[in-house]
Length: 137
Image 1 (tube, rainbow, N blue to C red):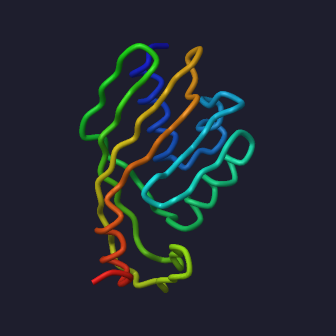
Image 2 (image 1 turned 120 degrees about the vertical axis):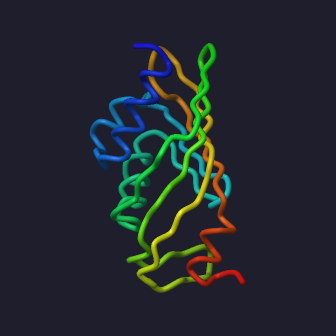
């Protein structure tokens, strides 16, 4: 399977909230780092981290805007949508659920090794999210 096919399969697994399918596409030492949220998980901790994302955003979905690839890497530009139904924490700040439908953009940078995802670096528009949930004006 080529790089684009791996990422397309991975993105479909995220939209299905299918942890088994997501983790099957990771290397054992996978690093998941969301730079804008200040979150990092490595290896076996990645599954629990992603599960926590799905708990916080039960209807989270991604639409791919652009997908680029090269030897051993891919970049995916996306738009996410989710409903704010759970408390959202950023450090000491907590935004109680508003029921608001949110939409924000981001970019994932993937490093692949032996046909699996070894690293995912997430960069997203946290300002839009923080404003929508009332943590930033």
